[in-house]
Image 1 (cartoon, rainbow, N blue to C red):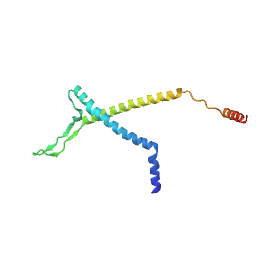
Image 2: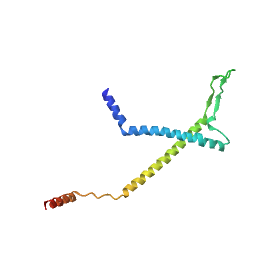
Image 3: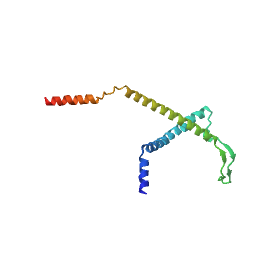
Length: 144
């Protein structure tokens, strides 16, 4: 049991597992932002363009709901919610587009940083001969 716990501890402590966990958490939060962008900003605008159409409510009713005299639902309606499907496709495309632009910006920024570092003049490292010569000269000065 102790060996299994140690193996699990090593697995969790590996960098790529932690990076993946951070990515999943940030991805979930980012997904909420994009979903809000779609639902709260883009879909109402699209509704105005399409004459007030709200995609999320679009459906094809296969079997209508059965309701008793008191207004209680006896049997739920069977429907194909194609509007919800369209909304999810738009969500996916917007998320993919946002991730594309963010990745492109990060790549461009990292390329600029890499280029800056390549342009920096490298410090000349002394060779072994030069170091030995310097040590010899220092020792000579110390004797004199």
